[in-house]
Length: 178
Length: 313
Image (cartoon, rainbow over all chains, first blue to last red; front, side):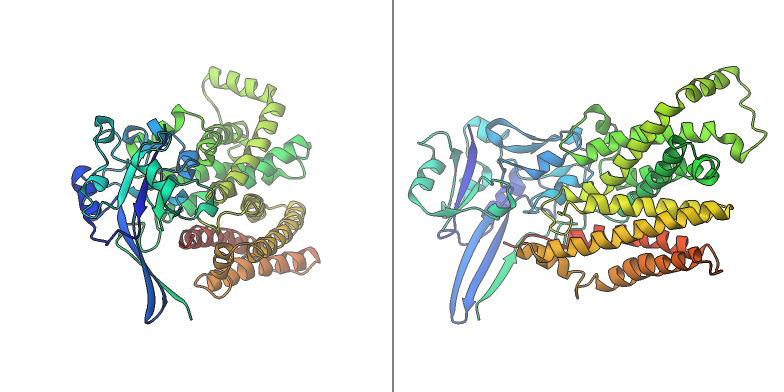
């Protein structure tokens, strides 16, 4: 099993519903976010091109955060999802410094927090992650890459896609349809 | 001209707009760890070589600084943790992939060793010292029997401690400035150099001072070579590494690095030590104080500039 997510940059309008849904679902402390929207504008006026991405932890196959964690609090869970066990985290910040996507943040309670793909609270119950299920343009796809019939497998078969900074060697599992 | 504008909705405290997860604690600890490693290395080395008489300060006096240095460093590390009460989790596993894990275990070896070393040499500081209890004398005799093993363990573990302070940073490929394998040897050399400087500062024996100054001069030379090597590597690498180097080549860290670290921390003390070896009379404390100061600034500059260097996407 290999959980992954695809975000359609041609459909995303940058409404930030995914951000709010995540904060509500996961009780994200005020002022922080586990997912966020990035807008990239390219070109010279008036010939501009815009790409909107809903970003979050890339649940990398080769996660620098799991590698550098001194206690094993950062670990690979079911389906390759990268999780932090709060009771094992000492809050040293090594994983935060190790993430090229800056997807982690120090939770006010002391441990390090990040996107979980809603693994325990939704995915294990057969639901999609909160951000995916709330998206008004249905621009996000989630599922198991090992299952050819999952929404994410199907969309990655038919569309061109990219990942963020693949040259960092992290083998990210968050795909952007382009 | 093609332009790119990136707007992010993320504003996480200590992450945005620029990473600042590590404050003064980490560079201070890396400096103190490196300094302690340097002092312990020379103490162990001269014991193994049987030169305790030629280098009395290096073997018997300077090591008394190390338990203090290491304790203050460990305290800084503890203060840096956001989840302080869980610090003991560090010592429930050994994760070889994580430099912080094996670094923490190295400290578990080095710190008690440094205390044992001081206990064995207590009479060098307090000639009339009395342990009062027989079992402490028994313990003392036991350790003395294994002096060779202790010296070798301390020599190797101090080298690991010194190199680890740099590897801690170089293991992070997310921060291009840190992501160079030169940083391990560079921090080790700098740690040995500050250790030698501390010995010069404490030594009352002109012969020992001269020998240590000669060693320090060589270490400064190696450091300068490694720094040049580091920039050559960056400038011949990818765009993010070129950007990382430019933090020091015209960027915001240019002055602290070239003025305080390279000029005042390396070049000037090297010149002073050279002149002293050649027989010029001058206050002996200036060069070592500059070396130690330069080592401290160096850790701060690398820790802060590293957090300013990143991948762009």
